[in-house]
Length: 268
Image 1 (cartoon, rainbow, N blue to C red):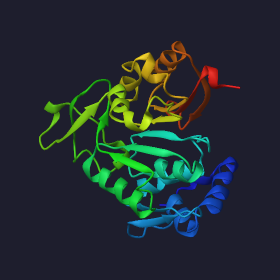
Image 2: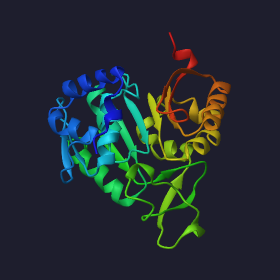
Image 3: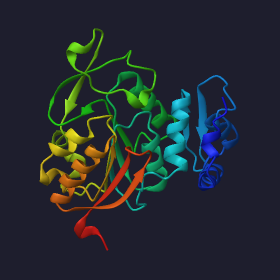
């Protein structure tokens, strides 16, 4: 079915222009995005900067459009250390690699099959030397968690679930943000994290609320997804209270979107 709503607003036309300017095989991506081409997947998205990204489903196309054509995230070209929490198949990680050529990126994804796709996409684009993929979930505290492989086929919506919810769960290691940073101290060596991106499907609030001030203040920029107005407000209150300022809000719907925070003393 054709997604007329994809382009019903004239303000969406710049997204099309960005797709054409950034994606080499845009002729294959745009028809899939608007729903007029339903050919078999997977399909390789090839950027003009030289990346090759394997898209497995229509949802991957939607995510790629969000990352590459809607500019929902901001990446400073001078970034040197970036953490991608909830890396999924690696779309944001690969975007960072092309915008910030000196960046070392830690891409964190817990679900086994999604992690394999992430690793494949990093290798496919020749970025093994710059990207470290880590299969672990991030939440409020260190623990063992569970993910449901039958939840749905959308890799972007797989999340931690209660152990008692169903049988056949995947067991995953869970780390707090502080423990994740500690595990990468040989890389960090006391340095600032230039960008912390958090999109861990419902665990964003726990991750932020349970992280201590010192851990969060290691980050120059924090960009985090929210899933409700209440979560948006609680994340904002927490980060504002420890010296971050909200510099941009990119709503995706009435109650979902991306919040961009900057450490106050780093603002001009």
